[in-house]
Each structure stands twice: as C-alpha cells, then as structure tokens.
Amino acid sequence: MDILIFSLFNGILYGMLLFMLSSGLTLIFGMMGVLNFAHASFFMLGAYFAYQISKFVGFWPALIIAPVVVGVIGAIVERYGLRRVHKFGHVAELLFTFGLAYVIEEAVQMIWGKVPVSYHIPEVMNFTLFSLYGLEYSAYRVFMLLVAVSMFVALFFLLTRTRVGLIIQGALTYPNIVASLGHNVPLVFMMVFGLGCALAGLAGVLAGNILGTEPGMAIQLGPIVFVVIVIGGLGSLNGALVASLFIGIMQTTAVSYDVSMNGFLNVIGVQVDFDSAWRMLVDLTVAQISPILPYLLLTLMLIVRPRGLFGVRDV
Amino acid sequence: MLQIRDLHGYYGKSHILQGIDLDVGEGEIVSLLGRNGVGRSTTIKAVMGEVPPQGSIKFKGKEIAGLKTHDIARLGIGYVPENRDIFPTMTVEQNLLLGMKKANQTGRWSIEDMYEMFPNLRARADSLGDVISGGEKQMLTMCRTLMGDPELIMIDEPTEGLAPKLIEQVGKLLATIAERGLSILLVEQKLTIALKISHRIYIMGHGKIVFEGTPEDLRNNDDIRKEWLEV
Image 1 (cartoon, each protein chain N blue to C red):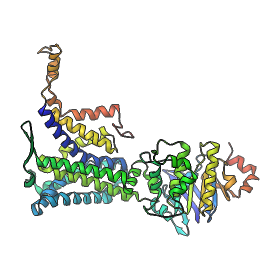
Image 2: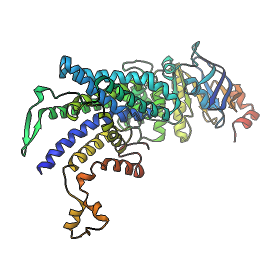
Image 3: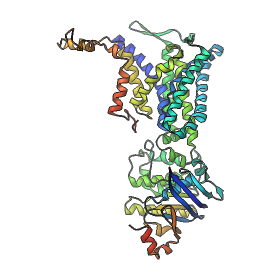
C-alpha cells in the first residue's frame, strides 16, 4: 500500500511533466500537422538555460527567464525555418525537425560538454516536506507539481476563455476559415509554436535538476512524449492530459512491482515446466516489461484506434 | 467595388479559371451561376487568396491579387464557404464572436441583430457547433461572416440541400444584407433565388464567363439556360 501511494504520487508528478511537454507538441501537431521531432530538445534547452542563468542570478529568475528564451527561440525556428520548409510538404518538415533535434544536441555538447552539468535543486526547497510510511517527499517535488497544475489551469483558461484561445481552437480545426474571417493564422502558428516550446522549456527548468541535465536527456524523453500524444489523440489537450497521467502512473507503479505471470499462474494452480519455452516469458515481472509497455501501447493504439482516445482525426 | 480582370487560376496543373472578367458594384447583388466543376467556387477562392490568382483583382480600387487571405478579409471582403464548417468545439455564440475581427469592434451588425433575424440561433447560443442542424449551420456561417462587418460578402451555395422554407429565409437574409448597403456576390448552381434577388447575373462554363446580363435577359434567353444551367 505504502509503495502504491508513493509511486502514485511520483506517477502524477511524472505525468504532469509529460503533459508540459506533450501539450505543446499536440497543439502544434493539431494546428500545423507538423510532428516536431525537436520538441524534447527545447525541453533540454530549458534545463541548460536554467543551469546557466541560475549560476548568475539564482534559480527563481531562471524559472521565468529560461522558458521565455526557449519560447522566443521556438518562435524564431517557426518563423524563419519551418514556415519556409512548409511549402515542400510534411516529409520535408519532419526531416527539418529531425535535423534540428541533432543540431540542438550537438550545440549543447559543444557549449556545455558531454558530461552532466551540476544543475541542482534550489537550497530553500531542498528539504523533506512530509513523510509517508517512512518514505520522504521533498518540498521541491511538491513545488514542481504546483507549477505544473497552475500551468495546466492557465493553459485551459487561455484556450477556452479568451479570444486568442478561440482563434487557436478555430485554427486547430479549420485554419482556412479562421484566415478568411480576418485572423492572422501564420502569426497564431508562430505564437503557438513559441508557447509550446516555452512549456517544454519550463518542464526542462523544473525537471533538469531531478532527472539530470545532460546532452542525452532530449533523446531519452522524446519518444515517450510521442506515445502520449498518439494515445491521447493528436491535437487534443484533454487527451494529452489523460494520457500523460496514465503513462506517468503506469511507468512509475509498474517498476516497483515484482509480480510475474508465473506468480499469478501459481496462485490459480497452473504450473509451467521449468524447461518449457514459455517459462522465460511467464517469469518476466511487471517491472521487467515496464519499459516496453508504453511503446507496445503506441503500436497497438495505431492499429486499433489511430485517432487516439480523444482525437478527432486519424494520425 | 470588386473588379476582376483576366483572372486565371490553377489547381495543380489543371487550368481551372481561364480569364474571368467580373464586376460587383456598390450595393449590388450579383450572382455567379453554373454547373458543378465549372470554376465558380474557385473564382471566389482566388479572390480570397486561397487559390493563387493570376490576373487583376481590385477591391475599392486597390489591387488585392497576391495578398494574404486574412489581409484581404480585413480590407472588407467576407467569405461564406460552401461546406458550412462550424467550429465544432465552440458554442454558437463563440462561433459568432470569432467572426469579429477585433474584440471591441462595432460595425453594422451585433450579435443581437443575428439573434433577432434567427431566433433559432438565440435558442442554440450555448450549444456546441457540431450538434446544430444543417439549416442552422448555414445561417450561422453567414452570420459569423457578417460579424466581421464586410462591405462585400461572397456566399458559396447557401441554399444547397436546404428545405424550401429555409431557402426562403436565406433569400430574406440576403435582402436584409443588401438593405444595409453591402454588396453581394452569390454563387449558386440553380436559379432558385438568384433570379428573384440579383441585379445582374453571370454564368460560367468551362472556366470562362459565358453569359452576362440582368435576370430579365436570362429569363428571355432559353438557349443559354438550356446549354449552361439546366440538366
């Protein structure tokens, strides 16, 4: 029970982190049809910028400045890169973002080196806020959760209660009509791309000091974000939230359980021969198969329901 | 108001518009008729910049060919596309609000005007865009465009698939629009309301204008009607 609650808490935290990344990615995809391979790279940039900025002015200003800088870079990439590539079609756009991911990774290595940089949790937050069943929970993690939840509320408010949000929602479904009503759709695209990158950057600022800030962090997290937006449904924010929490909780709880198929079979009275070829399969524990689960889900989802849980159109 | 000269347009490699000349005067209702696939919709899409135009398109004396769609809309051209695409995740009222070009714009039309003309829309104000009926969608797309306070409104097949009573309503709305001084370019396949409300009529065939005249001229010209309109 104690493990369950603890990993549930961590799962929600990890899930909200995933949501910060996937919300931007899914909005960008829904609007422009661009699957941005470099999205997680902006997450990495957020972490590195926060590390660099906090060296001079401390963590708190970095928490604000780093995502803004990442957002501006994102907007510039859209305006002067992606928009020009757009006329050559989606494959060209995909290759562009693919290349960009490597450009960012190599650039980060050139500037900050290959080894992790020492980006730490701010001292004021580095204490145990509460303990559950003897397991300690740090104040910083609770802070992360608070920021993530406020970001979700703010994003939701922006999209459903403001005029800009209406224009964004409209451009998600019928960009041509939004343009014919006199709204500057390319400008909206640029803003959404920048906002999405800023959110990824914010996630980097918050998580870089827990997960480790190193050049491989984008590649590590990138694929799982794709899983989230496919399962949630491309272009759907609600879907991204549900799928983020689901994947987050699934991954953190699964690794803490040693239950295997064999154990289950033993309970119901089925014995599998030690020499049987099946033996290896049934001996796998949940913890052992947990890394493959999200990707298995991704492939199954594409076969069974290509539009994802909340999506309105197929991949 | 609108002056099109030698307009050509392409979809990929096919030459859809082959030199269109068309005028819409101030306060005038002009209909552009023709069978499916002759290029009527493409003509107004070219005016909106959704299909790259070649040739000259002038609006209030200003050349607009080559401008971006949203800039063309901001100059005062409203466009009601034929597929009645209502934003499905927004309410009827939000759809109308999105038609306004600025948050605090005051023009000829208010949301209250729309609700008075179409009480159905008032009753459905808080319904989501994808649950209202086809007729309501047609009214809403027209009202949404009017909220942007255009001086010229181009409407693509507003009566298609509507019941006679609704067609009558569309006709009434067009008359109201004209009363308030707007110019209208109406694209239709059939003569349904065009003969009744138009000042002038153009007929298109194979990417060209094949007839230009008053409704009276068209009524008296059986050959043209038979060759280019009737099935």
